[in-house]
Amino acid sequence: MRPDDRKYTRTHEWVKPDGDTVVIGITDFAVNELCSGNEGDLVYCDLPEAGRTVDAGETFGEIESVKAVADLNAPVSGTVLEANPAIEDHLEILSKDPWNQGWMIRLAPKSKNLDGDLLSAAQYEAYLAESH
Amino acid sequence: MKQTSLYDAHVAAGARLIDFGGWAMPVQYRPILEEVTTVRQRVGLFDLGHMGRVELRGPDAIPFLDRLATNHVAKIPVGAIRYGLFCRENGDPIDDILVYRGEDHVFVVVNASNTAVDLDWMRSHVGRANVEIVDRTDELGMIALQGPNSHLALAEVVEGVDLASIKYYRFGYGTVCGIPNVRISRTGYTGEDGFELYLPNALAPKVWDSLLAAGSAHGMTPIGLGARDTLRLEAGMPLYGHEIGPGMNPVEAGLGFGLALTPEKANTIGFAALQRIAAAPTRRLVGITTEGPRVPRQGHKLVAGDRHVGFVCSGSVSPTVGKHIGSAYVELGLDKAGTALEFELGAKRQACSVQELPFYSRTRR
Image 1: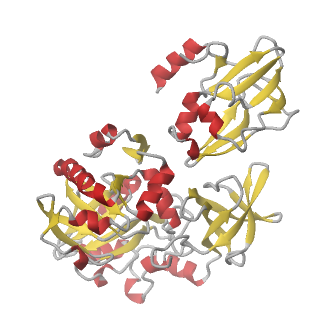
Image 2: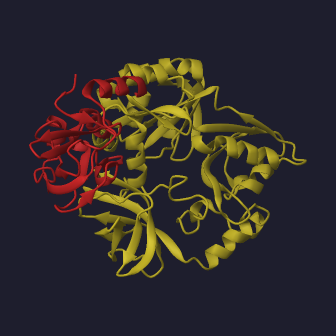
Image 3: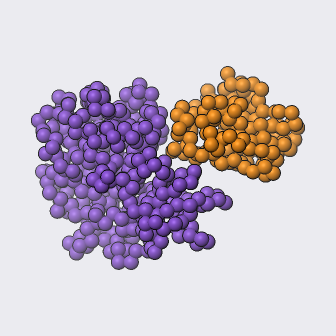
């Protein structure tokens, strides 16, 4: 079971409340789709600058592996407060610890009641089971 | 999705499977870059059962194919293989092909994704020609060994033929794992020495397993289509839909070796258009390398200052070159090795440098 302290998207991002802010990352499933368990296959991750506003579902960045480029989609609307500075030089943290160390961006959410089309951990598990 | 006769072997080996031209094919068994290195340094085994294979028989087989294929089929010696293309009247490639000239037949290998189109194209041009077009795709397996140890690995299971007698782009027949009369060609899509075997589907799993067992002493492992794409790009070989296709002619792709633009070939479909393009090309397929973090990808625009001067066809991380590489069309004048350009990544740009293709040649290292 994946962590149930956060919500998930069907495009394999997670969003976790942290005080007045939210932290966003991608799931272990997304990482594995990109690099098949081989962290060296991850090539690049493009994250936004602080201050940028994003709408739920909007692409906020890209992640690239040896063979593919995938969009990173905002689970909720908000303003970017910071991006994880460790990712650019240490893409391996995405495969080692996608849930904590591998966080990507922190947002000030537009609405307290997170506005995106979000799944609980159990719903995300069920979604993976039926679609993959 | 269609499956090759080796599908179960791929699943058992833990391969990651993808849809490739309507076939469930292994994209990788291990990390892609490790698979690339295995082929460059030792030997890899490839399932190519998805490739289209067509046999042409009958007294008009050669003139029939000469009307459709850009290479000069009548001039291919028996036992030899040549690269060519099917093009439309306007010079647009329909597919690129390998033509095997046999004693009593011609054997054509085409891309999986184009097999149906190629067959339609051939059948619609038979007219009065006395030729039989036999699609052998679903009855034949195809297995490739690629890499410097290919001949050592294959020799372990071959009888009745001296592999050294099968020179580059030639083929012969031999007994492989006890199966007689297997077509063995010294061809490939990696830039390495290697062989491609054509054998009945029912026997392919046995040969696959025997080759892996015999080849392990020579460092052989199975290799997926992911590494194959990087290997062919490093070797400067085109892929339909990337370097050639609608709007991307073989002249500017640098495939002149597969185009016979001599008067005897004037009846070949697309001849006039290709001759016109050859007389006045406007751009050229080149390599690009980049020191930046991003990999060039198909469709990225190439710019010089504020000017749009070309586009990327393929791109890859290249363990052999040690940089990210790509192939790209660039307007003439900016196609010289060392020319500094940029490719566009949304609103951003990354510097790249023009280089001659291929990036890698085993005879030039």
